[in-house]
Image (cartoon, rainbow, N blue to C red; front, side, top):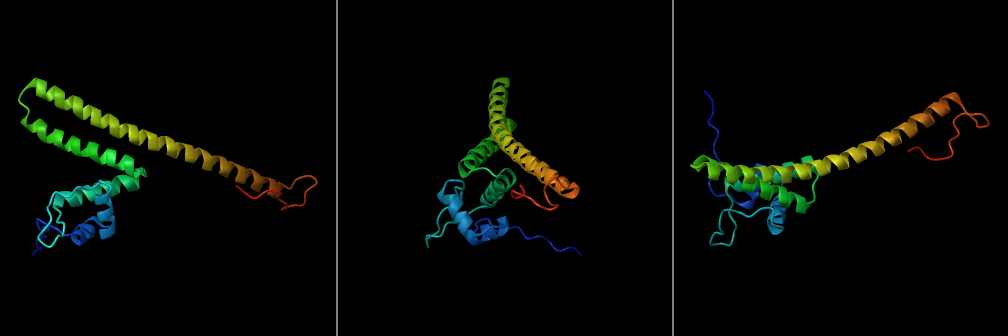
Length: 165
């Protein structure tokens, strides 16, 4: 007999969202403060903000993009907003009845993809630059190591005048 997986409640408190998303309540509040998270739930009588499962997914998405791409908070905001628009367009697509509607939706989706690709390409360029720098540093270290192994004329074996890398 398999145990049933219990679905999270419809309305969640900040601690629940943090636990489900794998972060801290402080991070959730910060994301809300800077506009990366706009809770769909409302405040309860006691003033506590309540969140939905969609809010948990948004937090997970923000964290994924943050970790994967290392974007600034502003860039993260842009990426998350574009992803939200893309999701809405996907929903709109299912109800589109005319070719004109489908073309409009596809053009908007294309713009979303272009915006996301621009951010990803920028990050790839930064990573490629870092890779070049580290590779050059590695070549310098290897060269110095070879020089130490062979020994240089006029220098005792092991003498290095500048620190490695």
